[in-house]
Length: 115
Length: 114
Image 1 (cartoon, each protein chain N blue to C red):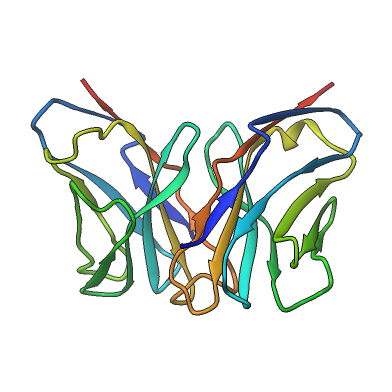
Image 2: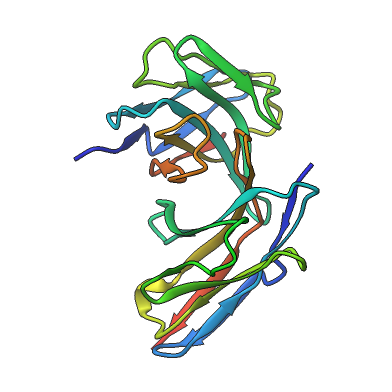
């Protein structure tokens, strides 16, 4: 079955560490997105990529980095510069560049906790 | 910048009854798209329904329908014959035409009671 796989499901980070969240899709979708979910704030866009080797900052990109070396993969690195990284992270993809016509397909998320 | 407001943090409904979730948005755009997503306890986001702003007819998907009031910038979701499996967080989302991101509201937790 096609879909988006996020790993790990739970991740614990020590202060000062960088961690990388994996996102892989086998849907042959062009665009991929990373959202952060916090209680009471909905989802906020971190980064998005509409094509391989290109990505754009979203609304809350500070302290995060991404790469898009393959169409199927869009990993997110949470750096030590991100002061409040504890959150639920969702990866999504869309068949077209914008997601306007068919919406997004989401992964099952990664819960990141700073310990 | 567009904003999406869901004024009901939590709601509950009895099984088999009808419930309406509210959503308002703020935009100066004339063409855009609106969505409702469901996030059950598994936390997997699922697209429930989609509406194009230039279409006057309200979208319907089985037990789910919307009341789209463009002038009022309102986009409510009606769930008929509520089922226990409808228990979830529901998010309203906006995308402008030619845009490249979904803007989400804060969500409404819906609990269906037996």
